[in-house]
Length: 71
Image 1 (cartoon, helix red, strand yellow):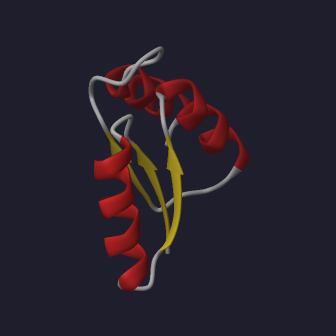
Image 2 (cartoon, rainbow, N blue to C red; image 1 turned 90 degrees about the vertical axis):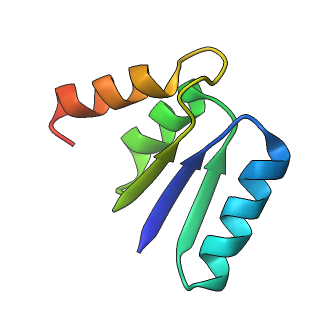
């Protein structure tokens, strides 16, 4: 299962990525909403973990974009 983790706090993102990988998930980590949108256009994810208050594009805006596309 492929998971996208979008979190601007490097320490928290690292912990989330490591924990998910240890449980067998394929994980991509990004630092902001713009990067999350770029990854979402390029790859298919079963799960997306979003920080609501990221710089540039917020997690809420990423979620709205995903829903508008039917994801």
